[in-house]
Image (cartoon, rainbow, N blue to C red; front, side, top):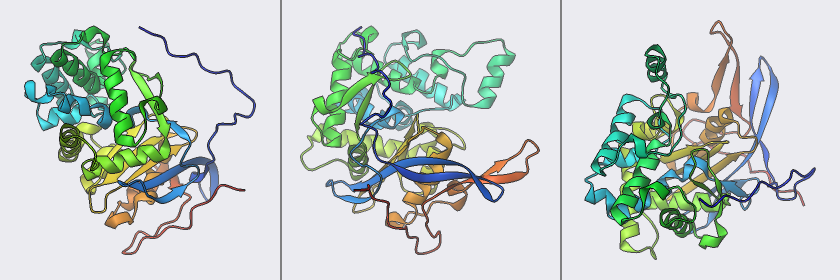
Length: 362
């Protein structure tokens, strides 16, 4: 398997660090204890920028926010229909799941329908995010298996594409193999780029991770929500619609009980997907469609919901529950001692608004 390029040496002042701005803060009592910086951009499906904070053109690794894009070949290759995959199984192929029983059952079903087993997964193992499942494993003296990893649905979908296409399933992670080249071309097409403009590195689960400008991630999600673009071939248009509709129909399969992506899709008409290191993307299918892409600069996951919530609030009629925007900080006795909240302002009543976004200094 071809190695990824080595990491560049750390420089004292990296010239390619995108401009960002304070975006969320942690209050303890009445004082700000910590500040998270970040950037976001909102674009419509035509590529027009509707709103931004910080540098929209700076590259970002998509991490798991790319999973809806990575699942598209599962549909347009014909694999999903050939193996009789359900919408629920298609949703888990887009997931960073918590390893709840429903998630594990769906992943096993994909593998079984494709004539495969858990042994074919190369997604890596980590403890389940679903606490009852993690506790059950520990009580039984069992170690987490690869199916418990949050990316196992994505990997099962990739394996199914390889089986259907006649490619060696054992090489599905190879960045130079036919599957990952197809995924790269698909992401480039959806996000308005040439394949060579999409940069590669290794993701935590072992498949390639893709990097592109934040504004192109927003465009890709806008097109996902809008059902594609006019110049897309019919098979890609159908795949975009089916992936979008599966995520919206089964939001609990995309993340898990109580998690931000799932709760947001349950309470709004949005399609949403977060990724590691503070990456988040969401989009609305309501005409005219638009997509939001967000990156927390220090990768802190606790800043994602407050920043994303206020950036989304009121846009296109979206109503994000206030408790998802401002989160409480509790002590070990369960008493509230602070909060994590956005540093952008929005009224959460009938007419939400934002302050003018900060601009890059001259």
